[in-house]
Length: 376
Image (cartoon, rainbow, N blue to C red; front, side, top):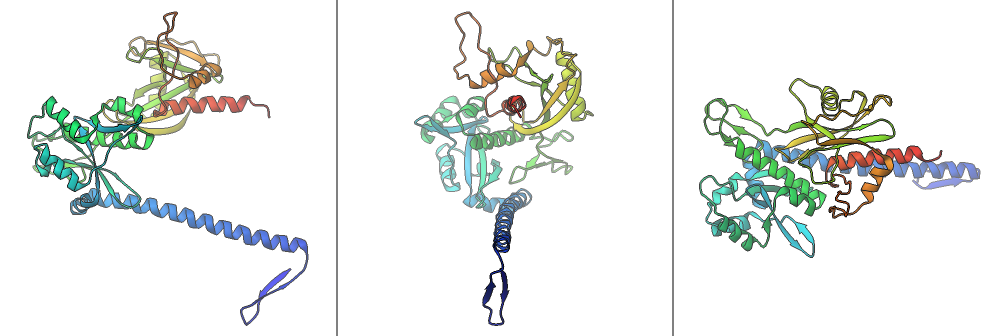
């Protein structure tokens, strides 16, 4: 079949054969599909770029950020604990408009200018800016426990510690609260210049603080932490600290020292904690984590030589460490809580919760082991 356009812009078709028709059909189909994929990918990319640049503008332009507060949404905290509402075993952090927030501040006896203490924590694809404000970190007044209780009654929720909240909230809300808490904590701890001792001034978005006396700019920071799942090829090494809940085992971890690369930190931590030497390592993923004071968790897989697997636990760092088989770890993933003491006095072996990158890292190892054991 051949196709051509006549001068009158009509399409004439001559039949030449089935294979030619199939080739033309496939060409037209592939062209449409490719154009559609390109269109949707460009649209997705444009949405992300637009959102990112909007947030960048709010961080750099105080007037733009103040304007965004007029139509934005506010999440509330008290002494770094997010406000959580619940119904029928569902939990969520409520949002308030600027008008609602100002009415609440007035009711709680706080100045409306407290809005300027809020921090920008993100925005929607429709460019609705999101902010967080801590009602319990007001330096101008002392808030008693009874006032906090009154706030919870008025707000029909409870200010919940973050370690408890991460088990209640969905992943999206939990990580938004992680960001909010980290920024609120950083600002509370950096109100004075380390050089001059003078009070620093927060910009409207909370993306930085400036010392008026010397113009030194301070930016929120995270501490880099490596999460290392060590394997000998068929088993993975898990450990626990004395502060862990009974029965909980996790991957090795440690803070990066000044001057170290990630590779050097991983090799040092494995050598320090379990007396093994890393042969190979592979980056897996990263995650912001609010504990202890805002960390960047960098997850990696590491392997040791099969003949060098004798663990020498550093009791200053760990309570215990052991090799676990694929079946043992897979069984732990299938086990459901609560993880209470058994009749023989022991506690069941369990793993970090789903919201942690350690959970994901161990699960990835299990899935790779499962795939490699399947027949070709």
